[in-house]
Image (cartoon, rainbow, N blue to C red; front, side, top):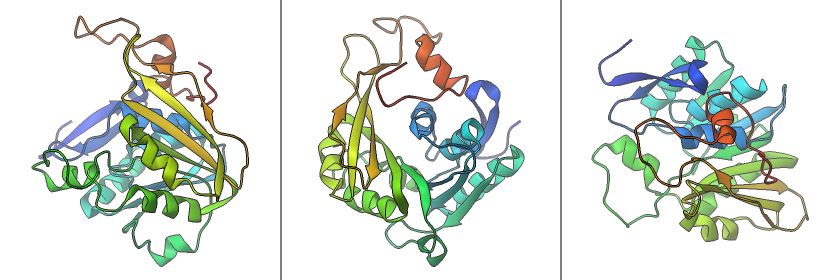
Length: 253
């Protein structure tokens, strides 16, 4: 099925078919991995800041049965997220609004978990994207610390906040984790054996005093190098990306 300016993409082995903009910000495996790391259970309430077209939120909903609320600043992406939820018969509520100034409807609520894939690139660096939606999703205008603060404010005591980050943004994220959270665990996402991790998942617990932990890397691809077009995910990565398994933050498979 096609529509002008959109594509309908399969996630979780085809369990989800989701509309995304052809030329704007497009979610891929990072969204699935992030959703897989959130330790939500059926009936719990989860917040995603910057939900885009709803890919990560809906992957989480279909895996856990949790109730998810997304906040999205781009009205067109918010509309796609609502459409994707309706067409896949999944419970996702989407609010239009800015992380820098959340709507009153969101400020009045609290959640068991929050998760986010904040813009990967700091302001001012690199080459900007031609599409405004993609540029806003990839390059920060709001400091990373403000994203973390907004998520932590909405958490109940004992709730978790989970972030997908470029590895080089990890120092900034650790600085943003103030004394309201602890139990910080970081799991590197290693593309191949012998390759440095380009992405990491960070998770923290509101009110915890557990020491910091660095988990074993989660290996994504089995081959040492990319030699053919076919996918070569490890069995563990395939279980997450295609079968909807959880991504454990303790270093397990």
